[in-house]
Length: 468
Figure 1 (cartoon, one colour):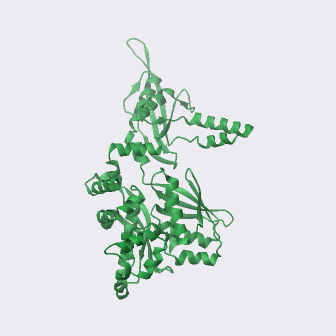
Figure 2: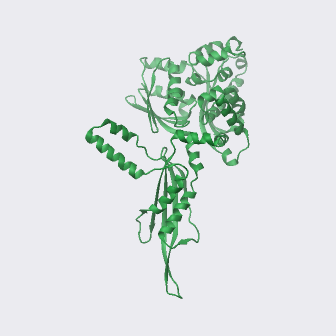
Figure 3: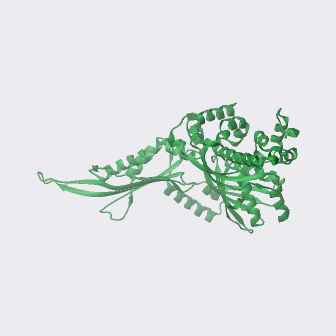
């Protein structure tokens, strides 16, 4: 009931009115549509098959966007509601189709079509932001409460090109961040401590120290500010007193997401007609001005970003063609928005760049259940094994006793791995033949069993990748 309430609340908010700013947010999604050609209507009119194939591809693109904010199991459990409220609204949620492949009949018996689409995710994002305060706090706790480091440097004409760190400005900024309940992180101390622990572990050959070093992580976000002053002196005629003022001539501020290297914020503002009697007073104001650029909601929104780029390293692929076939399988999986086959090495690691949805919470479990298990279900053996996930790198291994020729048959003739986690409702929409249903049952017996048990079930009542 809790999951159903959550999804219903989210869906109602999605369909409600929101600001144009959020409505314009988009993500690029690559998805695969499937169609079973064994239907009389398709045999009479292939145009209907292509329309259904394109419709399924669009629904999959939207399903991936929804999956960025809703747990995969919750999405499947409430698929009927999701389909009714969201997936059927593809014309309003897809901004445009960037690329569409020609449909092709695979050796697995399905027609396939790949699309790359720009999907509006603002409504989903806004719905998550409008969730209860408790839910948002819970999300941040799962992430581990963001760690933020700060560095503010200053220079003036007397210093020349030399920049010095300003403790005054940094402390004001740290105080501002601490009010959010976030942790202020010292990059310098963390690096120094890590160096000392590595040296100690090397001298003492201590495994425990080495393990501890691996847990010394850098900050999640780093804020950098730079200020340049001009020192101006004016002698008052009446008294002959010389008054010195500090004028800010330029300043810049940027924020970097240390998990991705992305500059998530950058700006430069120079306050007009403002001066200070001392450099410390000026730097205090600089610290406050930088702080005003960052709200608690800013970091929450960054943490709740719908997807992140990961490097997928696969060990043991026998040849390049197998690597291309694996890429096709990855494209169909729900958490994978986009994937690029970066490099192949038959004697080592083959590299994929994967745009992956979902949070870092329980990430290992998600990789295992949403990537590795569907692939193994397709191969009917534990050919893929999840090795590790460290930072932005995921490593899996591939091992099979079958010949390269047999492996190609496994890839091309078995139903797509994406159907291993498909809902009964999606299977009902795309499968038109009992023999096709039997093949899919080997991948997803639970969904097929539910489909056959339902009163409107299936059974006998059923009347080019490299460019993506």
